[in-house]
Amino acid sequence: MTAYFIVYQNVTDLDQYTQYLNAVVPVIERRSGRFIAQGTPEVMEGTLPWQRSVVLEWQSHQDFLDFWESEEYAEIKKLREGAAEWQAVVVEGIHPSNSMARLTTYHTIEVEGLNIFYREAGAKEHPTIVLLHGFPSSSHMYRDLMNKLSAQFHVIAPDYPGFGNSDTPPIAQFEYSFDHLSGVIESFLQKLRLDRFSLYVQDYGAPIGFRIATRR
Image (cartoon, rainbow, N blue to C red; front, side, top):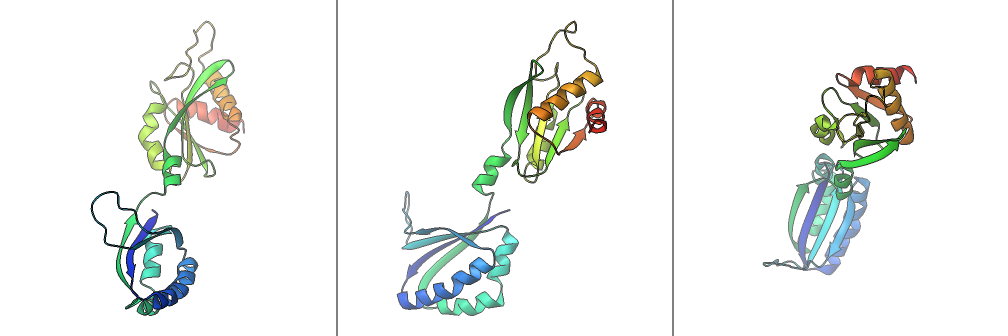
């Protein structure tokens, strides 16, 4: 999980503070840190007795600790003494872009004349997992699993024709066989341009998913 290092400071010796910055910035960058905001904080409520704030980002709390507890930084930190008054905190949290990517979104796409509903979560550059639901159910059964998988995977969960929020054509107009359902879902995957993916199957998902797998 991303770690944010937030520093509040009042600079008391600008020359010494500049020496500290010149020494510490290359170390921060070399140890995977990144400056994402710095400047004079605007107090919206209450009091904040600091002239300046800096926000830095590391990919993980451990990455931050590797910097903070390093012998290299321990030496540089001596330059900070007498240069400024400080208060610093570290906070773990999900990066906003990752947070948005992990939200489950809901879509409908036309496949072979039918409206097929599906859920999607996770960044598209991640490996894709297709979740095929059981009977009598729908993609809704995977709502919690999708939240857990979406940090590391791109996840797709469709509703078969006749299930969930997908169209339900009459039996006289649609053959509800595993062969036909697998064909519709395979067409659905092709329409989403998913050429490489893993299948996660449960109950009805097995005969549907296995038929797709054997045809690839």
